[in-house]
Amino acid sequence: MSIGVIGAGKWGSALAFALSEKNSVFITSRTPRDLDNFVTLDEILACEYLVVTVPAQQIADWLEENFVFKNQKILVASKGIEATSGKFLNEIYEKYVPDENIAFLSGPSFASEVMQSLPTALVINSSNEKLAQELGDLFPSFIKTYTSDDVIGAEVCGAYKNVIAIAAGICNGLELGNNAAAALISRGLVEMQRFGIAYGAKEESFIGLSGAGDLFLTASSPMSRNFRVGIGLAKGRTQKEILEALGEVAEGIGTAYALHDISVKQDLYLPIAREVYLTLEGKNPHESLKDLLTK
Ligand SMILES: NC(=O)C1=CN([C@@H]2O[C@H](COP(=O)(O)OP(=O)(O)OC[C@H]3O[C@@H](n4cnc5c(N)ncnc54)[C@H](OP(=O)(O)O)[C@@H]3O)[C@@H](O)[C@H]2O)C=CC1
Ligand SMILES: O=C(CO)COP(=O)(O)O
View (cartoon, helix red, strand yellow):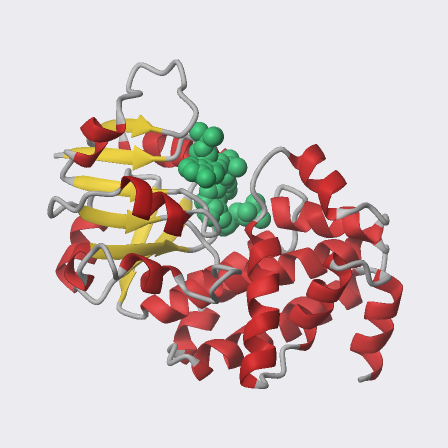
């Protein structure tokens, strides 16, 4: 069984490392890298399994320009909602891959800890339970995998938690304390569950690894890029300055813009996501805090 990883950034590299314990793994990326298993995209597309880590804001164009379906079994490892369309990842992929060939990875997983083979638990989400099990069996012994058929729930959890993590970083940067952080994360979980259920997600996904697990991890640590975006916003830095310093993707930014547009179009009450959007647009984070506490 050969696995082709697309995207050699932090997450693609970590998954390639982890999956190589039990499988032949190859990797490719937009920017060539001097890696023993770095191959061409054509060679990757010939693999039986594909693991895709191209960010949510770039994947639609990437698929249109590069992807050829050859009955590969695909694990989508990115997290986000496309800002330009409001589309979830399954909606973007469905134009190219049938449901029975695709699964979505979710759960609390810093790439840097996976690279150290530290214990991790993840969920493989697919309408095809057999595929989810098959993909789960590819993972190494230090990663425990679960399966779920709640693709929408997993996607909402993975995307929304990044926005709440930005808010948590703002809270940390403003030095508001642990009470405020706990309140924000708790209310953030309620907000993302309310949003997810409106899209048909299952309630239980939000109290498991995909939801509470990934939210707790990402919204509690400066290891999270999105959390670090929030710290930068609290210190009055612009998006441009923050992203230049970060040098990596922070999917919560694009997803915050997507959630804002969705909330306006569908008249949804998403107070934390709204304040993250407004802060990204230059609103004073102290004003955001006051509005969150008083409205
Ligand atoms: N890092 C983590 O801990 C985790 C990340 N994720 C998710 O994985 C996804 C990738 O994140 P991560 O790897 O950390 O981010 P990085 O910033 O480390 O890497 C981004 C990757 O996306 C590629 N890329 C960016 N833009 C394009 C484009 N326009 N066309 C093709 N490839 C592109 C980059 O290619 P190149 O570098 O070759 O130019 C690189 O391989 C995100 O959705 C993230 O939320 C999920 C769980 C954990
Ligand atoms: O998704 C992640 C952990 O599960 C990575 O979070 P960040 O993108 O905020 O670093």
